[in-house]
Image (cartoon, rainbow, N blue to C red; front, side, top):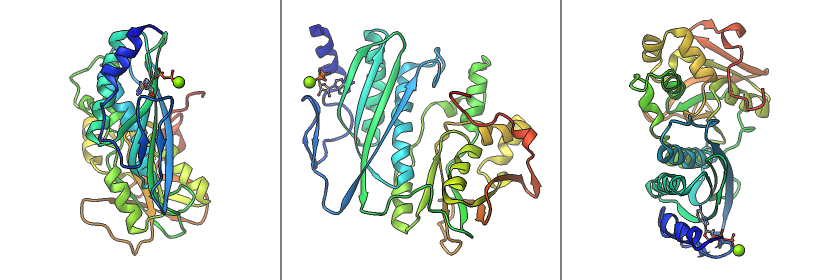
Length: 312
Ligand code: ADP
Ligand code: MG
């Protein structure tokens, strides 16, 4: 541990990110941070890792990769309906330049969403990586869960699906000026939408990070219901099909990850403002997920291997 490390931590992390929270008794700079929960509130905590060559291509800018890593972590708080409060950043870097770049991207994302940087760790590593822990709060017993969909509920979506996956394919294929590539720029964690859904009384929500088939499958399994989703109702579906063909659009939406839309179930009586959420399906007695394009069910062969699995 040379002085260089502490100088770097001070320069890159201390005082960066969003504003300090009133509940933070001891913030960044000590051995640990100390927090006082607000009365009647529950703490919501999530952690996520992002690793070069696994979560972003090696030739992707580190600043943007780190920004994305923070936003991906915050998206989990959005899915629970939590108000984001604090983050802890573990930065694993090949060299000083990588620390500076990842620090810049990560703290910019935290500042944008006004999330306090309450601590972290910085170390050298053979491979650039970040691990982001985030904490938020919500009123006791109101967290939106995967196991809370009800029979007859409608399925709604906030945000787009498939665009990131098609952008990544273009990037990896060397078409860095491709139409979809700019969807790799920033992740929008749907924090205010998540809070609003929870306040409206929505009980069941998930953020779609690993493709619609897999993540809708989590709701189906946890809630013990069958989910039926019409892909043609997705935002931008016609555009996806026009630009990438229906076959590629289906695979990108079903199996491509990292779009961070919110998928939630709510009784059909619950209505949402035009443009806030799109109704894309429903829940019924049974199990599993059926994807359709209009009336046509998508068959298994069209979906084989869809959904990202690190150990498949
Ligand atoms: P310790 O050795 O006690 O774990 P460190 O020397 O690693 O502490 O870190 C000093 C302070 O800087 C701690 O408060 C720690 O939380 C903070 N810190 C270190 N690295 C980071 C980082 N990447 N992001 C945010 N805070 C960090
Ligand atoms: Mg210590």
